[in-house]
Amino acid sequence: MVANDSTLWAVNGPVETDARQPRHFAHSALGGQTGIIGPLSCEVLAQPTPNNTVRILPGGFCIEANHGGGPLGYPEAPRQMYVHDLMQTISQEIDPTDSSGGRIDVVGIVIDDPQFEGTTELIDWETHRFWRPHVAKGVSSIANRPQHFPEVGRPFLPLARVTIPASTATITQDMITDIRFLAVERTKFDTIVQRPDESRTLTTSNASDYVSLDQIRSIIIPQWATHVKLDGEIIGCAATGSGDVNGRVRFVFSPGTGNKYTGSVPFNESNAWSRFTLPAFGTIPLDDNERGRRSFFRFQVQRTTGSGGLSIASHLTAYKIRVTFVEDPITS
Image (cartoon, rainbow, N blue to C red; front, side):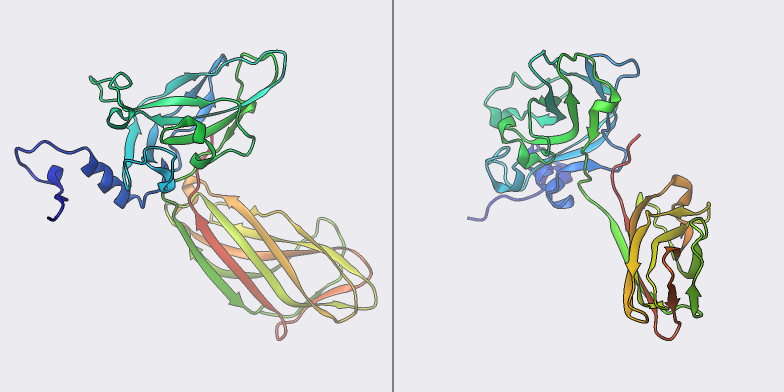
């Protein structure tokens, strides 16, 4: 006999909807991934006037009923997911610590489904609220994913770590670490390889005098991107002369609203005319007014100390850069 797998709630009819149907649909649509929906959702913050509670800001979230198919959550609910949009800010109390020591708590959202809990006392039947804020107390400092909280015993989405010193009842913003993650992360990457337009040798060692190398071709920033990750290298550089050449390399990112920079990567090279590679990497946050713009990238190399020079030859040198646009949670 074929199982009844019709999607009853998707068409009109007299049959009452089985709650498993929309949960299966949500699981399929979201790939079974627990997390927040959109980078601005469900951030945990201290109160404007700090007290013994924290705020969970509005936003969407989805929580798998049976995380990873194991014992975490409801084993009776495979391939099912709970989805909700928190419409207003809610507060959650944090228990104080005593003089014996501090504590690490994690604030999150837990599911109480009476179908699997065996009781209807946990749900408000007027609002059909099947979720609630929850604090996992005294957890590890590296606990940040649902599988790290088996003691909760229910489907759970961690949102923020709260590190509370001894003898503390007031929660301030510096105690809160954002550990949110997106259920569906979008990424887009491009790899660019090209040669410099001309040869040059760096011989100055003025600490503030960056020599800008050729501009890499432009790329459009996706509307959804919150950060750009840059990872590249200048291949085939050479030290000239008989002395060392020391310096640093960084990326310049120009999204049309001014320049942004990655951190500098130092180098220390000798052995005259030996060929070597200079790496550069970093992550840069994107602002609202930069999304959708045409962006440009270039390397900047600074020779800082040493009596040698740094040779970049157009016929022997190549630039390679991997540009990855990512969507991550945005913190206040």
